[in-house]
Length: 156
Ligand code: C5P
Image (cartoon, rainbow, N blue to C red):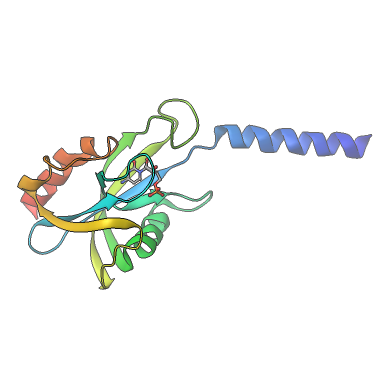
């Protein structure tokens, strides 16, 4: 019975931890030396055809910046160097499978520092200047970040 109780306690502790776990999403606003930022078009899922900053889900226990570097390597085939935090947007809970605002998208700006860009998971990659940003068809989560990205491009 004691062994069974210990098992149940461990199970309850694990479940409580899972309930508090939120899915963190990271994104990269990668800029070049011509004041342009890299945008990527999603190829599959409900957001297919819409533009986003490359990135994705942080794995449990993974530091945000490690996830950012990993996602850019996986999606774009390049090494990046993050430079500074740019902004954070609450996600609607669809990503986290939880309550509204249970997860957030955190975006850093940075530069490509190695490799050749290849769209491994997107249908299109494009370098755009500040004036082209607003007119793109953005996924909802990324659009609130545009003022910060535009400000960044003008001060580069
Ligand atoms: O790219 P991936 O499918 O791993 O992203 C997981 C989720 O994170 C997407 O479903 C999308 O809702 C969100 N996401 C986002 N903004 C990004 C990248 C991903 O909101 N720039």
